[in-house]
Image (cartoon, rainbow, N blue to C red; front, side, top):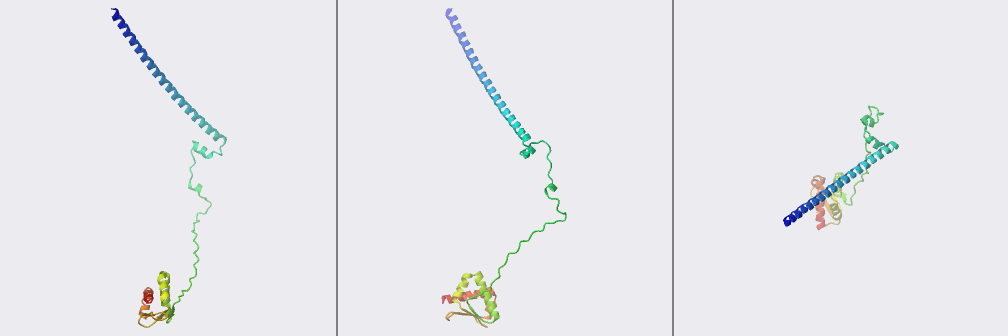
Length: 203
């Protein structure tokens, strides 16, 4: 009987210990949660206080120095802002009939074109002179390398009635050009001059 009563006492005592342990843990958890809530509340109050102090400082500056912070004051103000219309921006003193005239740029001064000269001797009438100078000037302007070949291996251009050919064996070399070749056009004529200068070069 005594053993049964002792076992029952020990069992009931063990249950009480467990209950006290659970209550202590629960109390500690509640205390920690309460402390966290107080910390969060303190943080919120601090932020709200700093925000209020900053707003009061800005309002004080706006009231003390209005000219320095006029743009900020206009932005912060709750009054209706004036609308900016086009007549306020454009000067209305101009007459209504005034029109803008674009100013023309002055033309660039053109350099006087010098007359074309060539070291090649041209034999023939005025038409021969004019056609040959035009062909040689075209070569000098558009094909300077070929023009250099012409001036190196051709010394005389002579206009004849018919028949064209290169007398490369003569000293100085002479190019004979017929009327049909000379009157075939400036580009054609210039091409024949370069062609026969090539014969003279090969010779």
